[in-house]
Amino acid sequence: MSKHPERINLTPDLSISRLVCGLWQVADIEKNGATVDPEQGADALQAYAEAGFDSFDMADHYGSAEIITGHLLKRYTAGEKRPVAFTKWCPEPGPMTRDVVRRGVEERLIRLGVEKVDLLQFHWWTFEHPAWLDALHEMQAMKEQGLIGALGLTNFDAAHLNLALSDGIEIASNQVSFSLVDRRAAGDLSALCLSRGVKLLAYGTLCGGFLSEKWLGQPEPVSIPDWSRSKYKRFIDTAGGWAVYQGILRAASAIARKHSVSISNVASRWVLEHPAVAATIIGARLGENEHRDDNLKVFSFKLDGDDRALLDGAFAKAKPIPGDCGDEYRKPPFLTASGDLSHHLDAIPSVYKAVPVPGRQDRFRVSSGSIWEPLAGYSRAVRVGDRILVSGTTATHGSNRCVAPGDPGAQATYILDKIAASISALGGKMEDVVRTRIYLKDVSQWEPVSRAHGRFFSEILPANTLIEAGALVGNYEVEIEAEAVV
Ligand SMILES: NC(=O)c1ccc[n+]([C@@H]2O[C@H](COP(=O)([O-])OP(=O)(O)OC[C@H]3O[C@@H](n4cnc5c(N)ncnc54)[C@H](OP(=O)(O)O)[C@@H]3O)[C@@H](O)[C@H]2O)c1
Image (cartoon, rainbow, N blue to C red; front, top):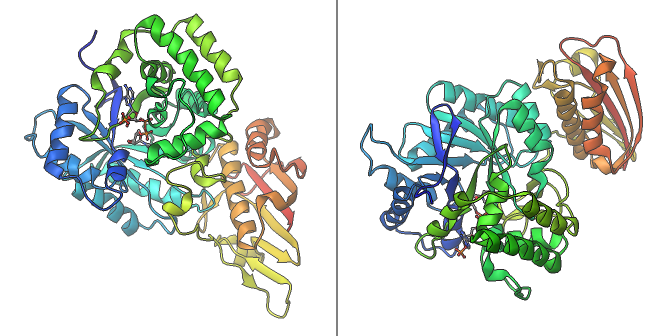
């Protein structure tokens, strides 16, 4: 058996372990106020690094994880091969000016004590707020200046990853939940990653430890003290509940016995064998437990057709986790973290401001700030009583920039986010939409646009018309208008 985990190149000059050591658990260990001693924490990380588990995953909100890793990195002299540090920046939605972005990234550099973040991953709470593209463009500029080694995303669905790529951002990786229980990442996201050269980093692969012998045949727990397991218990409930999960565990256990490995090895192996996946991130409770020897066995076997058929049989009894990757952070029932979104954010701010129409008690309007609205004299959307009318909307970012030129599907995604933001500023929801009209420059491009429309409306099913427009102003491929009744 190999003594060290396999490695993979995330980018041509960034080699990582295929088993990344995840440090969210530091925040859980510290949740009552006591912090991990950074030198002792660094000792624990050094033991991982020396065993070949030398790639660490953190975030701005993982307690003192970045500081502990900074203490580890200081132990290596310049020019010496040092461990790899991934971190994340998860800002609150709001304007992503150059200063805001630079401050966010510089804080990561300072906490880690490095001149360049090896991999900086970006999380965004609501795509209704379009400033995520500003943040990514600024981070790309910082990458070009050598402050960021590789740029990654976390919890992005396929449509928004595609939008980022088509808007010119070079994305190395997308970190998402991917496990025997949550198989969403095997769908559209994997297909997109393979076609556009983006690698997946999988977390939640062991469902916080639920995918292990420890839980095989055990009764359903009444209370769960740690954040990670309480999050994945919600995934288990959503996938059909304890009995369905035990069915998946039993299938994994039979496969594990056949290959003389553990259930956790089977769970990790299944994820790692997906061609879009570069690595799985396995959470570590520093100073409490470590499973390195067992996790190394992931590289001692391969799943065969019978193993896959057994797992597929167990999956057939489960419900798919709804939506696409990352929806757990953005949409009810908010399956993530310690309860719901409110643990991270007080509220999602409205992107546009509703303004009363002078002299008309039942009328409000919003502007999206494009130069065309005052020039031609119209609002992005108007509310009249319980009706909301959204103007023909193009993928205009800020005052005048066309987003994702040449990609009608990506433009449609951007437009529908903008329509959602306009409707919510006026007190409505996408569920209130009763009519949409799509104007398409080249009707042969109907499919990506229709699929984008379907992602928003497949359960709402408004009346719809699709019109070939022949030509649209500028680089716009598509324009969409909508009407809602609140
Ligand atoms: N981007 C995001 O939004 C996001 C979200 C969540 C997590 N993450 C990242 O992913 C990492 C993984 O964390 P996670 O919460 O998803 O947990 P996880 O990796 O699914 O589970 C980790 C737990 O599994 C148990 N374990 C590990 N190896 C084992 C083995 N061989 N046999 C039996 N049990 C084993 C350990 O539990 P015990 O310690 O109890 O033994 C460990 O604490 C995080 O630290 C973080 O870096 C990212």
